Length: 395
Image 1 (spheres, helix red, strand yellow):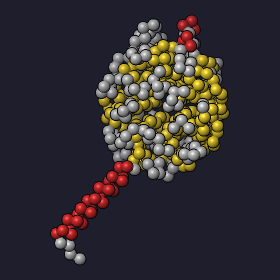
Image 2: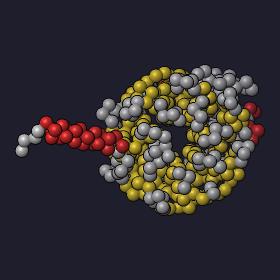
Image 3: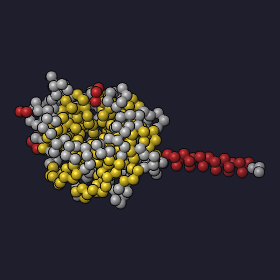
Image 4: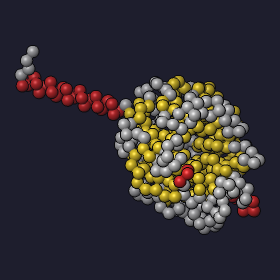
């Protein structure tokens, strides 16, 4: 059959429309990007995965992985405008700022050193004005892994370009950090910090730590100010808490705080008062050696159990937890997060399994089923994950 000129124009237009529709459909199938820190290589690496909006399946982007800017990347945080990723490299005591492209690619922008040594946790407040980092060891004379001292928390202002300014000064005690110790009289008692949570309302910051010699856990609280300075809650004394608290999560309304204890195999739930003070609500059992925690739309809570290689799901009602079920993962899940746009997927990074496990969340019950092709292969030893939504804010 032979087409006239008008028919040829119509055909070309139809083909162009079909191609445009195809590309539009492909782009909308990417609901977000996950950034996964891996530690085997030197320097470390950040793997980037596309999240499929229909199946939840993960696919690495073509240029992944990216160098982390240091050795042993251990923690990550994303700016609330989704334009910057901050990666903590434990063995180099630094924080690397990456610009994030619209296609998920990472572009290193700047690097700063932390006040202390062996940083292990990082968070950005919801306003995008301050970054918080927790160090394993304070920057004091004679402190080392062979001769350990308590940890610290420091605060960095975030500049308009996403870079980090000079750490905020703590005029009451130390120049660039706040100590994480029982009191000034027993500062030599070694408390190893483990995790941090900044409330969504930006009013308070909480840090967990434990004493390995006594199997005693602690929870530090700090109120924040517009200048970034921290004021210790509870007169500076931490709350005694279990044996080895290792992970924290709070709801979007900043009403409840949940703390995972790896030795007690439990979650401690608290209500958060206007002052930042915490009131216990109860303790809920987990699997063996829980390692990480996350919430989905404040309705469901998920905990990864490192020793069991499972994920346990709970419903959340006024801070109270009810067990939904436990689901298998690949070996040794040590971090867990929902998809960046809160569509309804959940992922773990499995350190010994060298993989990520994916699940679809039942919106009615919170139960999990495996996503397509889960688990997904990682280059080796993934330890942390965070992400951004594609083309818009998270729901």
